[in-house]
Length: 275
Ligand code: AMP
Image 1 (cartoon, protein in one colour):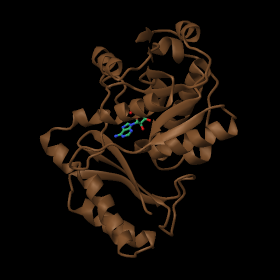
Image 2: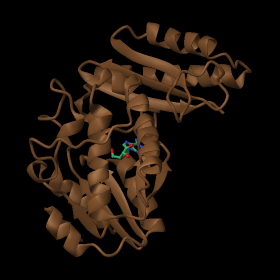
Image 3: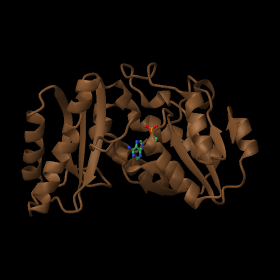
């Protein structure tokens, strides 16, 4: 497995983009990331994983400096998965101070996660564009865990004519239902239990949907009741949205439940389809 630490090395080492799969990550890898790597490995001749904690997608008071960075461990995991290259540029090279060119997908990026984290999706779209230009993959693998990110990137790829096929992989969960996240390591034992309310709220909504309820407001009522029973968790949003536009959907069929909440100081996200 090659480790490429700068853009010139990546451009020189990587083959033409045919059958090249890219898996962008911020490291601190878990089974959710590895599921993307395995999907890429199954489909592509060459698999490149990027490890880059993207400063552009963090707000000024977020956890950029304390975000976990177990680089050696991550590389060992990726080597064991048969990854061909890890591209891990430094922030000074990939996102130098003073750059004035950004990629924005404003109508989607302004909603929900983007409303809570101004500039977040502009940072994501800009850096993913850079990675696409540098690595030139045929396929790029992303997790449904970050559903709004997927919607932003789908739209970006379509409208900017990137010759990349996005492959969206299902959410990988802990056995008790908590969606895997690099931020789960921040949770203490009590918070870890409280964090299950995100999954419980969505399950309550899915159960009401399965029982025939199609009105999103009624479903949200069931979901919010679960949060009311866990007062130590601060719900940021719980919505039923169109999975492409992220606009609220009054009719639930084919829509997506999206939720974000703060458990202690840790912000967690989750989502589930209504179908
Ligand atoms: P991150 O390192 O958090 O930026 O995530 C890198 C990629 O892994 C993104 O496409 C995420 O959506 C995906 N991912 C993170 N957690 C999960 C999970 N639990 N299941 C599936 N994909 C995930």
